[in-house]
Amino acid sequence: MSHAVTHTAARAGGGLRFAGRLLLAGPLLSACSAGSDAGNAAPEDGRLLIDGGTVVVVDEAGTVLEGGAVLVEGDRISAVLEAATPRPAGVPVLDATGHLVIPGLINTHGHAAMSLLRGLADDLPLMTWLNEHIFPAEAELVDPEFVYWGTLLSSIEMLKSGTTTFADMYYFRDDAARAAVDAGIRAVMGPHVIGFPAPDFASPAATLADAAEYMERHRDHPTLVPGAAAHSLYTTPFEDVRAALELAVEYDAPFQIHTAEDASELATATELTGMGVVEALESIGALRPGTVLAHSIYLSDEDIERIAAGGAGVSHNPQSNLKLGIPRAAPVVELLAAGIPVGLGTDGAASNNDLDLFDEMDTAAKLHKFTNADPTALPAETVFRMATMGGARVLNLHDRVGSLEPGKRADIVLLDTRRAGLAPLYNVYSHLVYAARGSDVSTVLVNGRVVVRDGRVLTVDEAEVMKRAYTFRDRVREVVARVAAEAR
Image 1 (cartoon, one colour):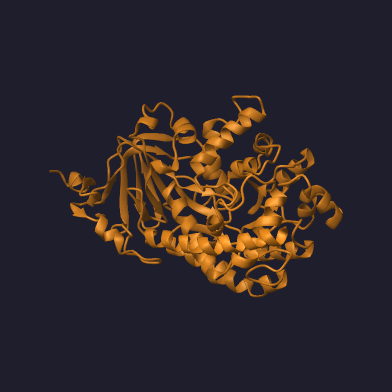
Image 2 (tube, rainbow, N blue to C red):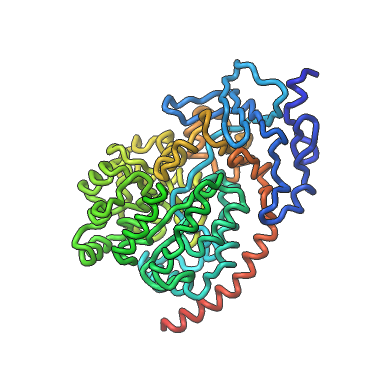
């Protein structure tokens, strides 16, 4: 047997063998606890060759390599190899035969801890859903434990369905950050201001009082990207939105804000600021690269021109918007034509109700074909780029993630095509957008670390997280029943 073959991965006893050594049999996974590295399957020398799959690079040229390979060294991609290129000797190999090898997907907008409120209040208009159900429930339910376990639950769901980076806007930033780090997922999160007493801080001023300490503490973290957020212009005083933005600018960090999601926002913004939503954000310098304008549905031509001139990005959340009955789609075709970075987001699981970006891609592509009465609108490759490099550009992380190019962080997903619903394969983008689903993901790396193998999360004890999630159910039901009774 040749030296190269001895390093080829082979299935044995439910796991994979690296260099003849079984790393991932079931018993090795069962002992993993939150924050443990016991399930980290990265080889000891930090090198791994993912070989034999169809590598979808997502570079400017649209390179797709059948039988290609990706060489990982430490936390980065060091090389992408064509089928005929000699492979380096002595490197452990993960056999990707029958798999698409893609960049990790990027979820540009969500509220991760709200997975514990999934299905709580459905089939309602946005403002009714928010003001009569979600905000009252959050006021009584949300605490550090809720945020930690809810964020952990969402992180598992996202990792297992191929999302390696997500942007979060929620409360108890330290507990959300701890959950993301424990799960091993890349996350953009941090101080979040809203104009009424929140579960974590009584005022925007209190939220921002020690926010710089959070930003400083995490500024060089390998997977946690500190960022600031303001909920929206319709919930947060304009000066507090400005203060949150200034924090993000000081640390060259992402800034997130809900923008033009509902038809009523224009009138509210005009009343509060004397300007439209986008014009008001422009007036304080918010339309800069790294600002995430979540939703951005009710935009005028002038708004699009302002966003394009400033360099901000848009997070498109089609499933959440459809479910909440928003009667129009974000002008994604026009945004892309204007050169504006557009990524995909799921929003929170309380309004979606899942965090599967493959599902989101399929919806986005079909929604815009329908609303534009044009089957050529948003081709599959364009939508897949939105879920990868588009999202990276929206978050201003395109120098780190979003494609499988040398020098970038090794955030890599292997998707198993060996099932009836994905055979035969003619066009990778067609499969990725219209046929694949999150459950087809088999292996996930974040920052060079294997965090999902054979569909199983290696970083945390999923059974324990599920158990904890169910313990919140009775408490949620009690609070919701009381809120409903008081409303009557």
